[in-house]
Image 1 (tube, helix red, strand yellow):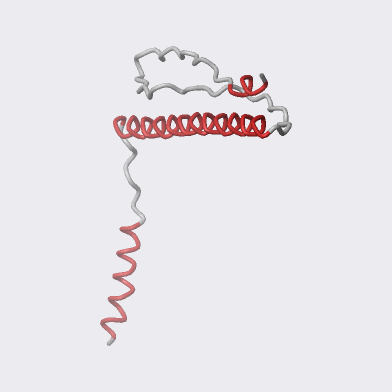
Image 2: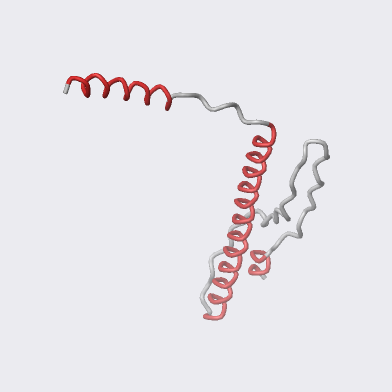
Length: 115
């Protein structure tokens, strides 16, 4: 009985010190992988926002057309910025210059709905 009273705290103390050990600092390859994963996630967010913008424009144009077809006065469309296509994901390397951003043709369903 006294042996377990002595060994249990000793074993717990041993386990507690081993779990508080620090991990080594990440190497350059791990840092590059983490940066690439963050860039992919950010690009995916931009693509999702672009697709949402296109869907909202399509719904707004459909609403305007349905109101016009029904003979009801449709509310004036709100001016919003054009949907910006983020383009394909490009891995930016440390030695290479960033790729130039090509402006996409602005989608203008709101302007078409005004006519």
